Image (cartoon, rainbow, N blue to C red; front, side, top):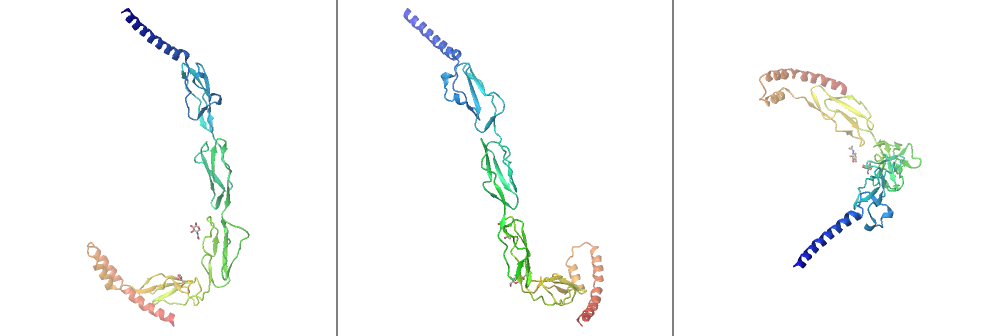
Length: 325
Ligand SMILES: *[C@@H]1O[C@H](CO)[C@@H](O)[C@H](O)[C@H]1NC(C)=O
Ligand SMILES: *[C@@H]1O[C@H](CO)[C@@H](O)[C@H](O)[C@H]1NC(C)=O
């Protein structure tokens, strides 16, 4: 019986002893585990081979900013106190690479920023193109690569044309913005006389051509007179303007031009007899839902119209006869 009691007492004693020992180890020995990882910071080299038995009470560990980052305040040290590491206050920020450089006839786009990991993109001015790599990366050691070159866009030599020439032929390489003027030695120039070397390395248009041109025929429009362009000879690009005799309405375009195909462009206009009284009456009759005061106005208009055309016709036919004679 007493043995049992002794056993029980022994057990209680042993448990208490283990607990006390455990507490003693934790509290009194105060060793720390591996130090925690912090973003953008690394352990100083000397600590990288150390392990838990080394981290005794009061042990200090120093961090440094990781490659590409620079310290900006705080302490780089943490201390082991009662088996706990104090928190790291060191602040590590991305390093700045500064200005990526000046480009002649261009610039760097640094909208992304100039800090570690950012990219700067070369942009050439209009009419210039990039030679070399246009992207620089901000690395731990600074901007990588080199400043690229923006070189002027080039055009091939302007084409020559039959029966014509370039008044200012190229002297060496043709660069963006250069223009050439063509002239015909025979015939008429059709198309653009000036070609400009564009930012795309081509010309603003096809070269002109020199075309034989015998002129356009002298023409007349029935019931019309010429108010400009009396001829009698019409060359390329000459024009005639027609006006209808009173009582006639012009359909089409009043002014026509002597076109490249020796014809008048656009089509010649026509003069059509102005609508007579019955036509107007019909038109008015077709609009019945008009309010009551309207008919009065209409009557006035219709009564006014007829005399004018008849007088005008007589007068104009006379005039025409005179012209024709
Ligand atoms: C020149 O090249 C650009 C780009 O390829 C194109 O859009 C343009 O139409 C070209 N111009 C002519 C006149 O061919
Ligand atoms: C002139 O004639 C050519 C060849 O017949 C034709 O292709 C062209 O469309 C004509 N131009 C005009 C403005 O009528």
